[in-house]
Amino acid sequence: MVRLEKITAENFKECLNLKVAEEQKDFVSSNTLSLAKAYVFNDIVTPFAIYNDDIMVGFIMMRFTEEHNYYFIWQLMIDQKYQGKGYGKEAMKLAIEWMKKDERCHQILTTYKKGNQCAETLYTELGFENMEDFGDDEMDMVLRW
Image (cartoon, rainbow, N blue to C red; front, side, top):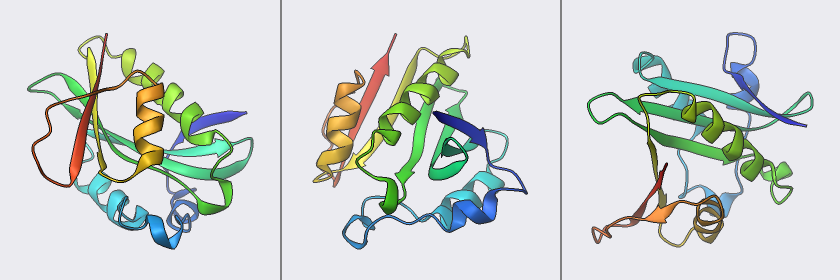
């Protein structure tokens, strides 16, 4: 069963060992960089480990933007050994459910690098819609309720 658990002193080293495939490294930040951001921005960022039963399979991190009252999915990655098993989609469903509990929030934003077909498919299947294309190498998406 897939579940989210906050990153703590007890599990952060395991999170640092999660890796994507070599050809995916341009699509996501390293977990080292993401956890550094979570430390620096700890008042607005929440990092979670993604577990399947007792095995850590991935990492997701959300940032709350208070001035506009929305969450931003800042990082989502599934370790290369566990990809293609639906863990990313199940983790996103749990994360969306967690963010929707915040009554201030009525939308979730995310971006993905153009060419990352897996991310595009995942977010579209979860109900995210494309936003304006600003002509850079990323695509912005939003989920509203």
